[in-house]
Length: 194
Length: 77
Image 1 (cartoon, rainbow over the protein chains, first blue to last red):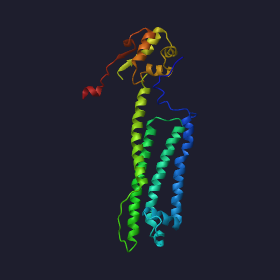
Image 2 (cartoon, rainbow over the protein chains, first blue to last red; image 1 turned 90 degrees about the vertical axis):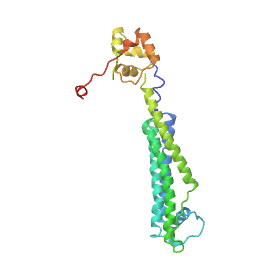
Image 3 (tube, rainbow over the protein chains, first blue to last red; image 1 turned 180 degrees about the horizontal axis):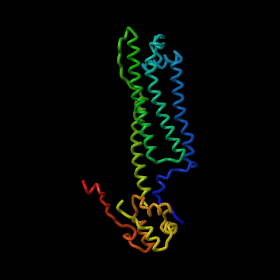
């Protein structure tokens, strides 16, 4: 009876019925859910001045403190809301990348160059998200302070624990993607050796 | 590729089918087919050993080196 080489199975992928494929089918919806929740929050921010006021206060690091009601109204709050929307769109894009990755796991592709590329892309997405969130907070402070005669043009650069977390996760995923790419290349080489 | 695999010739000489060789040495028929067509990046000594044992031949009977022929353009420049 012919036995396949142990190395040839490394890059052969999984059957769609394997435990990983079944779990990946469910896990694929987690990033979609996260993206949907953030997008709903952003839409609410654009529609409701109350929610916008809360979001802007959190951007300024003054959650729970009294805020001038007109600061959360358009047109004053237009650009700050735009700034807050950009990181959300980047995050949604990153979640779509993760969704694609889990879909590929579902289809049985595990260790290949495309998956490694997707992991790296997700890492870069998290890094960009953290950077965009920091820039958004800085610009929000600047724009809101310029519209307030008592604090003309305040520039504060700050970062939160979640920004640092996103940075760390991003760098880890990016590095992991590079390692997976190399592993996929080695596996491919092994598969071509009889 | 300058390494020419003559496994198919050896199989014909010994009157052994690819399927039987694959079963005897523990690799798949697909791998034997890839090896015959030279579409592999390498052959393990272990595999080579088993093939030589089964076909009663030397590694040199299974593969040979043939220098690449220079093209007309390459000779001119």
